[in-house]
Amino acid sequence: MSVNRKRAAIIGIGAVKVGRYPEKQESELALQVIRDALKDAQISSRQIDGLFTTPDLQGNIGLQTNLLCEYLRISPRSMAEICCGAIAGGLTLKYAADEIQAGRIKAAVCYGAVREGSIGWFKNLSQGKGWSMIEPTALQPYAAYGIIWAYALSARRYMHETGATEEDFALAAVRNRKNAAGNPVAAFAKPITVEDVLRSRCLSSPIKLLDSAASLDGAAAVIVVSEEAARDLSPHPVYLQGWGLHHDPSCVIPTDNCSTSISHFKATREAAKEAFQKAGIRPEDVDVAEIYAPFSSHELIIPEDIGWFQNGEMARALRRGETDITGRIPINTDGGLTSRGHPWAATPLYETVNIVRQLRGTAGPIQVRGAKVGLMHCEGGMMNNGLVMIFGRD
Image (cartoon, rainbow, N blue to C red):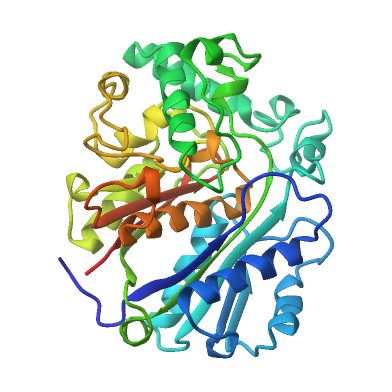
């Protein structure tokens, strides 16, 4: 395995239960998880010289990091609020790692805190009108209620090409819910069946209510330090072994020609390829993975894009339990977006928190035995802006 002399490492994590926090400000949730992460890392805020966050959705006009500096009494040498859709949480980790590897900082806090559900952010974003952010001629008229239609088109095309069924999608939702029962920060833990999913309200065919991630509040934080600091400070550091990032030339779905696939995604494939190359491993070397799938249909697509299964194989893999906690490649052991919950800006950080717990061996009832290598995948847009990170423990 290739080793960077200035690898970044995670030594602390914190997260609140995904849900609704109408009585709290986003900055309060942020402070809570940062303090929890500092306690987990057994360091003080005075040792932090980098602070990186995702967009705050209400009240701080981009100045939340300034407020957190006052709360924590810190003077970072590097600080940024990063927005690039739901990939933002992952980009805070990349930015921190870049700053550490460049030698500009030694220890950073990466966090995301959003009250998406309590303020009705997603519901109110379009208000029944086409989103101005979407390409106006071809796509904007369809975007009156978010971008679920784009995922539905992708799911339907995947069904046409592979023979996958709505029952196969439902199996992924059921697996996620089963896993969420062992995750203390998951929003939904009540068991569901395939029949429950199929009978739930149709949102945009073939996607149903129980196939979908809910718009909720949440906050998560991660302490990232240099390799040298990690060896001094932590008995169980988790290292960033490699990452890959790719964006194809579209915002949500391709509009340039009719030959670009919407049943598989170049951004995920290229990001995964780069991440594996940098880490010096192959897809089959991964022990546990968190993938970004806001709808259960894409629980089938993304594992194929990353390289664990050939086109159309995921339906059979789900039936065989190959992605279960005890399976060949455990995926979304914390419940994934559909059952852990999906406060979008913080979601990649929640994914990372679970990977760290898995690699430490502290994931409790959802622990993957002997996990040494973990993968975190996230995206912005509609799978057209992909980030894959590989984590490992020495």
